[in-house]
Length: 75
Image (cartoon, rainbow, N blue to C red):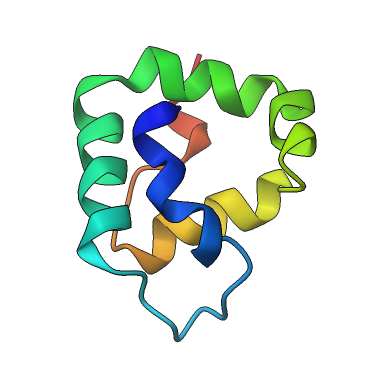
């Protein structure tokens, strides 16, 4: 999760607004190499709430970064 702090300011953007590589790069890396950790974050919405982020915005961010994986691939 700490690697994704660069995405915090882009969580509530519109679908047309692509976040910078400083956000998308670590997000793609997390999806590719740290999926169990990422799935655990999505499974614990209280973590997102602590940072005023909702799961829907977090999922939209992945899409805006061009990440095709979603939580459906989580166990």
